[in-house]
Image 1: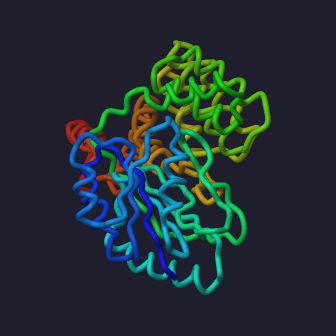
Image 2: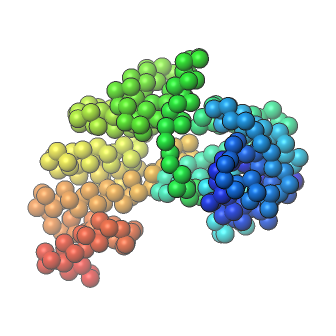
Image 3: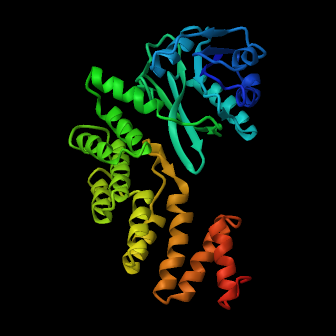
Length: 352
């Protein structure tokens, strides 16, 4: 199979080479669509490929990605962002995935996307000419169709130092003024409002989304963002209700239970905090369902919370045991180092 790497870029000269160096030997061609760079991005891109194109920015990420895909000549197209990389240990996995796609005559491969401690699955490789197009002006996606493979090959999002700004919010505001938004885009619009600290507006949009139809995973995430909005407005009880509302849409998520534990701990209700932290530790990975699996939220962070709540309840040995488990997961984490010093000064043997 011939595999085309298709990218859209703008002012990415600081990170583009890092991305392309990690993948260039594994693809048959590289197609780069620039949407208005004013730095050296285009010149840098031309060091890797002759297939560099310009596309006027239209506040529409899907349009730009479709422009890039349309210029590919491969049997399949793979996308990356400029601040993504393929880890060296993933290259054999990518080669195996390419073989698997060809052998099984697949139309799409859905793969892991690693963003810090958060892991989720995204469409990554699609068959060209199968009618699959990018949709959505922002937080764009391709609707899966045909034969879809799920694979543990992963792309790592390293990010860049470019300021986030309010670009996505402005796109959503303009889009909503022109036409109604579907459930998925209402969720992302509400989240952008939250990111920009427009909590009352975010609450209204998220409640609108939750009141209609929508994918259960987006509804669970919407409950989490709604809870954050309500807490930012000073209503922790309402935030707890929003978190618990998520249970109506699916099994408890570790991130939801951990947030409930944190709120109970911060309000001095340590027995309730212990219950929810322990529940978080027992929650599985739901990323194969499409969840944003925040791994520390169901592993490290509940243990750190349990250290505090067990200690507040006078349960010194339980507190230390939770610290020991946290130290095994993240020995250099600042909170773990702080607790190590605390327990040593308290006379507990942290060397055990």
